Length: 337
Image (cartoon, rainbow, N blue to C red; front, side, top):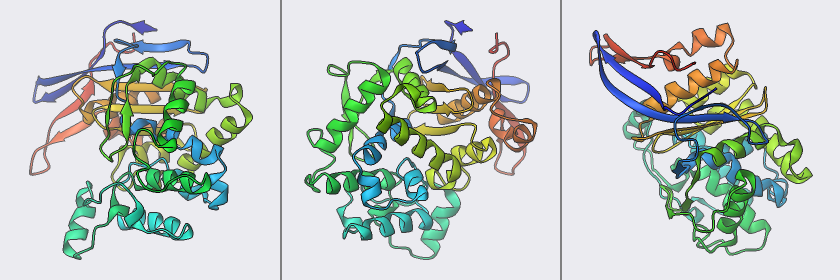
């Protein structure tokens, strides 16, 4: 089913729709055939952190993951946009120590946790915040490990011309079957280059990770290792009170998900070999969370028990300061066709 109209995510208060978000989304298989689509399927977007599983492929393909004896937990961490909890910072520091490096070698700047309870704990305990707390530190550990293994410079590894970054652009183009040579570029939140690609290419790349049999042996193996790691360790990918942690936990290996800034979300639907790409026009995460959860449910990714567990992601309650439910964030009727 393809609908040229985008999904509409409504935000209600009382008996009225107070706000609406336009969400473009598609589901495709590893050949690029669209299973479901809503809106502009070829719109050009910055995929942001939704592509971290793709960005982790060279970490395994080059042999760097095995050279550093990366655990399954660390493979999941390489795909993370985490909360910057103590657990995540410790993962980064332990990993770097095996390379003879420290958090100071990471070129992502440290910040306090974006998750409320973790932030309060950091402030209460006067924790020292380092680059290891950056929500992208797992990805950067993978970058450093790859550069170290390939005997490439460990400094300025976030520069566009560095081999680490050049590999990533090549992977995106190959997996998404698109020419990115003239695509708009920018700087991502953690400092690495970001490159625009069509929404359909992002879905295709995700589908090829979900059903990697058509890839080279090395890339297929890398894809399977990464998706299995994410499914096994969702907390390392995100953290407490996070959409991706909740959904992958109840998914029990049927799919993995990855959020990106400015209203981007990806689903790698292992059960059916589908890729899911979602983009909210106005960059609002609350809309893409609801849209992604409902698309996973449409595809059969959520059994009855999972639906009950993550019902707040299928239709998110809007609460006031006293905790009273004032409305909800939901998909407008008719979106299933």
